[in-house]
Length: 251
Ligand code: SF4
Image (cartoon, rainbow, N blue to C red; front, side):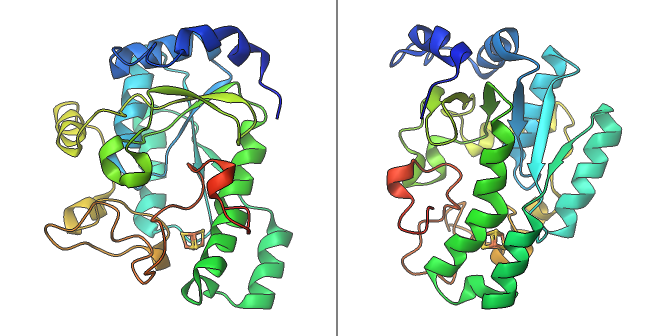
């Protein structure tokens, strides 16, 4: 997969450890300076990290961009938050839909709720509703921002603050909150009065698609409410896994 020219030029700045001492705001300022308007925030509208980043980016550049992958199965609370953010920041949230024919064929062949049947079926659904639409969308970007944090699960414990995302098309991926704790994120949104998903108050630390997310009990990990029925799942949809970890189905 070729590396995008802007990313190639900036590769020396992100040599291992090159951006690790930078704050979240410094990384976003660097990203906006080098990539805007070909930079966008990937926000699920189901996690406070994305909302904190949206607020930070908006303070730096009011025309900064944000997109959401609308799988068609998001929780109504997440759709409400999209509209709330649109009004509060006067920002056009870019809504990315899956390919209708792909989804139609999948549900016709395997059923509406195929994800409960096997890890492979769940990964197929995530691939068609999330991973492929995301990869099509980022083809027109030079960089994107994610709310990944190292403490969220084992798959994310080595997340760098800035990396080259080869699987998504050779563009830069900024993870400004990589070393933040959940408490720091919640403090930020409280201090800055940033709107967040109302389900966080009802025991959902992370809100994904409605049929695939449930509240967690005190002491359970942040992402344990995602695909909770899977014993051998990885609590990931494939968006943030390199190709070699995506398995035979492409996830
Ligand atoms: Fe499909 Fe569930 Fe993945 Fe959403 S989270 S894309 S409904 S399997």
